[in-house]
Structure formats: C-alpha cells, structure tokens
Length: 237
Image (cartoon, rainbow, N blue to C red):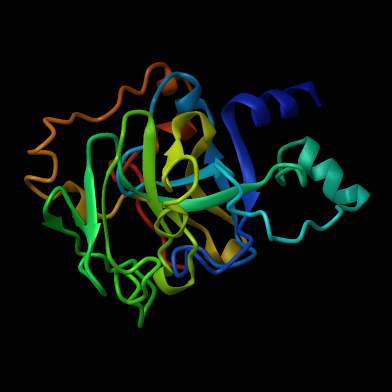
C-alpha cells in the first residue's frame, strides 16, 4: 500500500476523461496515465503535450460533483482513479511562456506567426470557434503560464473562454499535475500520446530562441522517458 501511495504521489497516476473536449485523441471514459515525476524535478510542459491540471480559477464551477462509492475511494487512494475532491482538467498545450498565440475566426491557429497543421482536431471542427467568445484572439503567454486548448474545438471551454479570469485564461505552472502519456483503458484504445509533428516545424521557436525544458532526473523511471515521439509510437485503437 505504501508503494502504491508513493507511485501515486510522485510517479504516475491514472485519470478518467470526464468529457468529449479532447476527442478524438481521448474519449469520455478513457483512463490515461499521467507522468507526475517530470514536473516534480522542474520540467515544464512543452507545446503539443496533453496535460492534466488543477482547475485554475473556477473553470469547473458549474460542473456537478458525484459522490464516489467505497470502491472508487479505494481506487483513488492507490492511484487508479483521481480523487473526487480534486477538480482536474485535461487539455493540449498550445502556447508556452513567450509564445504569441492567435486565431481569427475559424483559423488557422497560429503560434509565433506560424500556422499549425492540426490533424488531431475533431473531424468537422475548425481550428478556432467562429463565435465572439473564442473565435478571435491574440495573446502572449507570460512566464510561468501556459495556453491550453481542447482538440474538440467546438466543445471545449478552454483558455479561450476564460480570458477574464485572474490568469487571463492561462494555466499556471504550479497547477499542472503532469503530462498524459498513455491511454491505458479500455484495452482496445491503448495508445501513447506523442507530440504532433506540427509543433516541430522550422521557425516555430525563432522569435523566442526557446529551447526544450530540462528533464532533470526523470531518466530514473523508464515510463517518464516517453517524451515527445522519440519512443512514443502511437498504436491505433
């Protein structure tokens, strides 16, 4: 039991997907494994990664909370399910500190002036929403914060729709739980969650002189070595 608690606290934890906001990469009811070790050693999210984070400022204020049964409480304790008391979300990182993220109407979505090719966006959706709330925006991401968006763009109340909160729609680094690295359940949907190619396009970092974050001691655990696409081959499910 002590080992399970250690793994949950410092290494990996399972989270259940509560909505359709990350389709088709993630379906409602999927369970993902989240690397919690890398942030613990000072690593920060990179563009294109799917992250789990605590509610930054009432994003889930109107969402109902279901009281867990005894089995769910036990699974939460050993890390196989998230705690019902934790209000967590899952989105894709689009902008990191220093980035300028913008969209006009239906898109394309641009980062530092470069248009993103986003095949992961839900079929039939446009890269941005053609509505006043999230269709047109241009933001610069400050230090220590991240701009996040769901892959199901027309069904995701993400950074675009919270620009009037205390973080201007950004997710503070200290609210990030970790990076989702594997779809672990159901077995028919097992897959890794690599960073899409578009985030490696030439010139994306040119305006920033940015370099990837340091992973620290994350190499001590094989699971957290699944960074980007080097060892993360996606399996269709």
